[in-house]
Image (tube, rainbow, N blue to C red):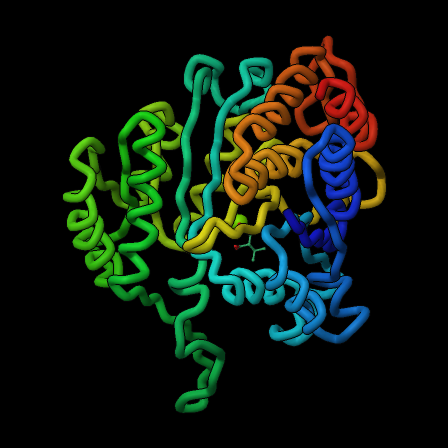
Length: 353
Ligand code: IPM
Ligand code: MG
């Protein structure tokens, strides 16, 4: 398997280093992987003037999988939009047609106290958010800020065609078949026509999966239910923007966004794997960031693009073991546990492997 590694900016560099070391440890045990680094985000803007440069594009297209740290930082927020790091991220998602974003939120029993919710509300939590990633208001045209009748007007377009909805629907139902066989589709059909179509198409797709139970929820209610009774959910499927928001919310149920991996897949299981969190400029370079979300993203990489379930489980078990040993980075630390830095956490996972 050929993996394109994009550390990106901020803590992306530190956490990706640990994830790469995990892959190297597996390689010395016989896993066949090749890794090559490239630039994405702010570092790419600094080096080439573009957030998703041609060279990165070539390497990413030629690879079986992409491992990404995080992009962005205040330094680049002043640039024109096309040169911002986030555009690089959206660019690579679109370029590689990574329309299916899987964001699992599961609570490790050891972290029940790290959640801001009561342990009994979150214990045993295991949700999969399936977020559409290449459409919606993120990419819809027309967009921009113009002047009309002497007034500035900001505009974005929320748009989905039925094919885009159908293909993410299939991903959600297939995922549910391997889990608890429930899909909750999240929309805002009481106000937005785009999401009326979303609901209609989900109902059509559901007919092909009689073993899976489909329910619908309006996004405002879904946001509330996630903190009220999150264990009612198995798979949640939703559009790009609602999925962005709900997945951050779900991450906090698990104690820390520093624990959440993600996979972004195309039709053929080529994928990009990244933590759900950002580049955390406030702690960048200090060696304190939690590398577990990125290491767990390696597990997803092995599972989906590598079709190597055994190796995936091995990485996940190593993470569980390290948590059971009481090792914690600052974001998940509690009294009685051992506070460790990024590198030490990586070392512990590799030892547990
Ligand atoms: C995410 C991030 C990105 C998004 C940003 C960095 C563009 O928040 O992956 O959830 O909105 O998709
Ligand atoms: Mg987000």
